[in-house]
Length: 193
Image (cartoon, rainbow, N blue to C red; front, top):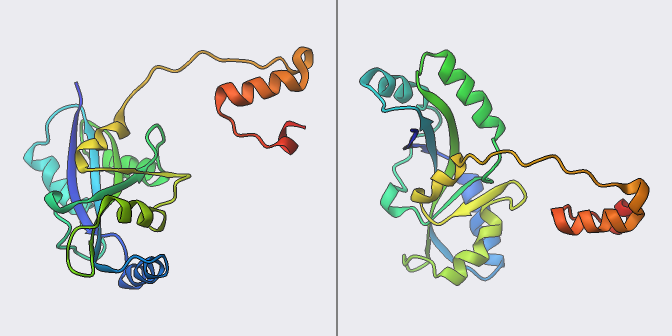
């Protein structure tokens, strides 16, 4: 039985990048006050962390500029790699931690926890936050989770599906169009041709 552990990290975005997000938000009609971003690490473990493992993690995850917010209670949205994928950062960090002697680690993944307030210091409305999200993440490679508690979705394991084939030789374009719809391939007309 695996367990998921979440650990805060350093500041995720530079002051320059945060200012750029503020400017782009203002152009979209959203006036921001507080805007902070912090890395958050999620570990899938085979057991519990002992004192030596905690010390190793403290050393390994101590990088970048220290951040004082957001805390776990203040996180408004969490940007993570898309569930079902393994980020390049995860692959490398998992290898490094395993080679450093962290026993029981299956995988580590990293997300960015945001706290965003309006110009008056109030938490953004759901509508304003939805409008802001395109400035905070890349929807092709990342997902937005409502809180840290949802990060367990990053480690869901599903059995592989059976191999499917598309008989283009016998079914022609119609078979490819059916596969495009059924598999959600999003092929354009020129790609189908």
